[in-house]
Image 1 (cartoon, rainbow, N blue to C red):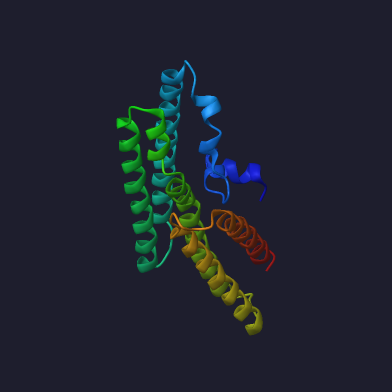
Image 2: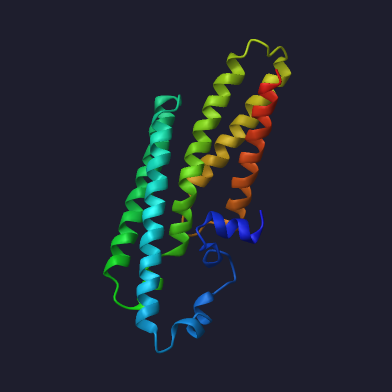
Length: 199
């Protein structure tokens, strides 16, 4: 996944989560001028809009997971992660609303937490898709090779582990690695679906 793709996935903020980049040292050239109050208001408006977009995306994922055919115990685990994400982003939104200074606003946005939350919806939906694929593969009467079924079972388990990992990211996570796993997992799922369609 390219840098541009990663930034797009993170809503334009992933550069703040990558290692060895401390952007606060150079944003002073953009923020410290006579229009600081105007920049602050625009920043605040942007972050609030981004928070609302993230909340809407989490709520969409929640509906999709609730309407999937996942086993109830797995479904509840995924829904708990979505609800945790909603709680965190609502907290961030509250902090943003009540900040009065640009520097404090930048600190309040907690980019790494935000990036982790932004990966929850597609990770939750990915987990739900794997559950459906699992059911389709093992209920398909055309499957004749036990060896093939065993390989599929291993792939599906690996994919569930990846999505579980993505659902449990925190501030200490390596987001560059997480984005690579995210991309590869969906790529592998698409291949498995094509193979299923060819049976």
